[in-house]
Image 1 (cartoon, rainbow, N blue to C red):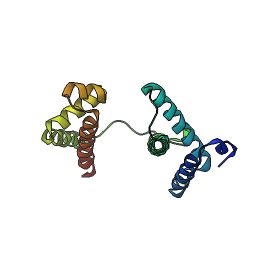
Image 2 (cartoon, rainbow, N blue to C red):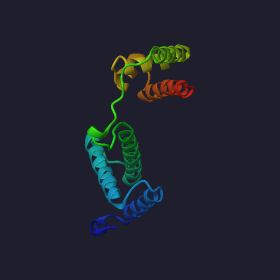
Image 3 (cartoon, rainbow, N blue to C red):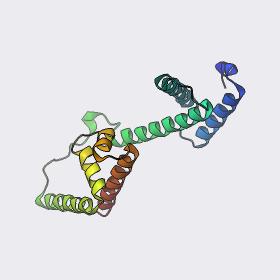
Image 4 (cartoon, helix red, strand yellow):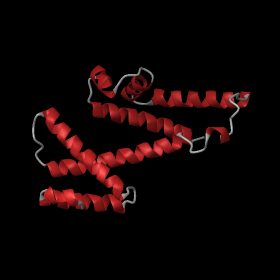
Length: 172
């Protein structure tokens, strides 16, 4: 713990020390990142209390939960960024011929048909939530309101649809 930690209540210091150890043991964060995560957690705690105009009953538990979620979010975002972007300079990247062969077009068309079939066979709410989000551009909250379900249910439906599509893609 650093110099600023001496001003924290003992329970919070213990929880932060436990949280630091847990994140370091997972090997996903450096010590420098941990301070950023904890600072982000405190910021979210303050914002939450300000927006709700109420104190959080157990700020330590709230902070630990938020820090873990922020950490997971950052790990996922970093993995996605790494998959999308290349470290190679643009000049060194081999350009791909974008013209496809008739065989590739037929395979792509077949894959699209299989995905459409999978979605058609899915739960109607799952299909509708997925299509409204991906092709209708609606937010989870808007879909929840339109379908008269919770945003968590929308999240579950979209996850199910993505899993169906992913399974179909893996069959390749």
